[in-house]
Length: 139
Image 1 (cartoon, rainbow, N blue to C red):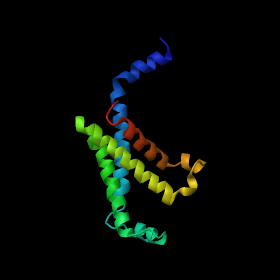
Image 2: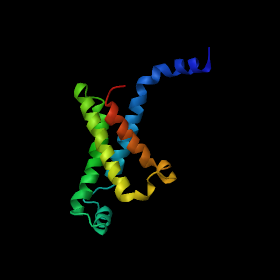
Image 3: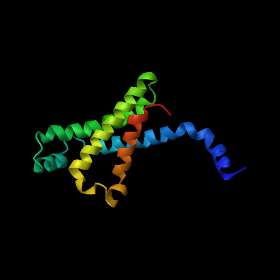
Image 4: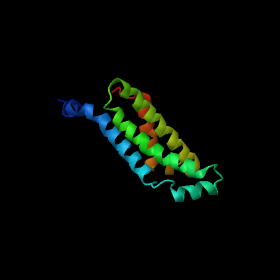
């Protein structure tokens, strides 16, 4: 038996867990990032948005916090919802992608196609959202 066949046989019982591992890590990470911005509005974020000239910074900062919690929860919950869960998961993945694109644009614009981007946790959140936008609940 080759090493590849052996590893296949060891991994086979766990294949169904792989998307759940990604789903739970992405969901919990996004929930925790969002909860870290409570109570609303997140004052530090509001001040930062004001300094950048963003309109209605209290509203935008609060929407980011709620969006992060909601998207993270939806990524997880979507896995339990059967048929409609596929849509919920894809929409949640899209929300993660939008939020992370905003984060890259506003907070990390100097990271684009640099080592900093590829050594940050943010790229993994972005890719996780992209994965669920594309795959939904299809394994």
